[in-house]
Each structure stands twice: as structure tokens, then as C-alpha cells.
Image 1 (cartoon, rainbow, N blue to C red):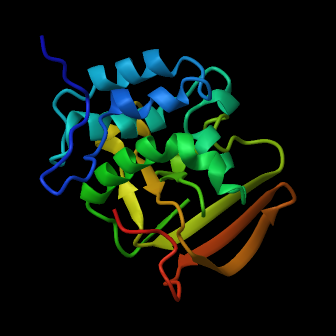
Image 2: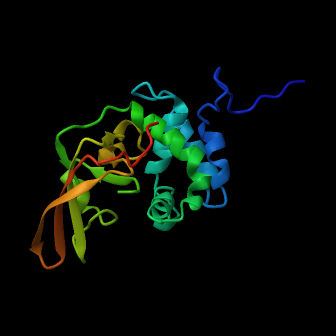
Length: 205
């Protein structure tokens, strides 16, 4: 009998991009219920748009999913890790990050528009989405960022919530504060603009 693995080596001997199933193996102890969530994402990514593979699209959809507890959501955990200085903590995420960044690299960038640093940042191009309590709401101390950036990807066609028209700001994006504004006592608005770093902050995929 013969066996096969979920990843292969290419003709150069380098390890190829790991599909989603393999990428989540190191995350099972870090992200609750990730196996079922990954299955659901893959189920909804059988015929992806933008010439992405099903695994690439599923990795983006998995990122867009919301767990019952926000701090258990897949998007929350790697972002908190990316902001720490202990890079060894990112090792379990390498396969997943490689997969999702490869997929995001295939999506067309949105240039010259404004949207609401080391980590991924979920944004939207629709201001009405901000009225949702889980996103911005209408009460309490809140901060909204508008970002003029070329380093963003529209993941609406690969998101579990396409109606939110979700935009993803890629990690390691350098921005400059343009101005700040307080329209009310409990709302703080900050305008940002992406700038080119002197040296790349992220290795190309």
C-alpha cells in the first residue's frame, strides 16, 4: 500500500504551501473548536473567486469567523501574538500565516481609498457596519481609524459575512498619524496614512 501526505515538495526540493488541514494542526491547542470551524470554512470555499485555491479561500474565511467568545476567535489570537516581542510564540502559526498571506497576495489591492500594524486588522468600506454593537456601537468610549492605504485586500467574497464588505489590512503596515478629532466626549477619530518603510517589514510571499 502507499500513503500520501497533504503537502508535497516542489521540483526545487522546497516544501510547498500547506493546505488548510495541515496548517491548523499546530493550532488545535491554541484555538478552541478550530477543526470544526476549518471544516465549515472549507465547505463554503469549494468554488472560490479571484483564482484562489479552496484552501487559500478557506483560510481567509476562517479568519473572518466569529467565535462565541471574541478572545477565542482565530483572528484575535494571532494578532495579540503578533504584537508581542516574543517571535517564538508565532511558530505554531507559520503554516497558517503562509497559507493566508499567499491567498491575500492574489487578491487585487485597493488603492487610494480610506478605510476604518503588526497584526492583521479587519476594516470595512461601509460606515453603516460600524453601528453594530460588536464592531463600534453607539455608546461607551470608542476610537475609529480611517486609513488611506494601498496595502489592503477586499475579502468580501471569501468572508463568512459578505454583507459587512470586510477589508483586511495586512500585518506590518507602516502608517503615519495625519490628524485626530474628538466629535464627542466618548468618540475619538484618528486619520492614518500608509507610508513606505525604509526597509521591508515583512518578507514577500
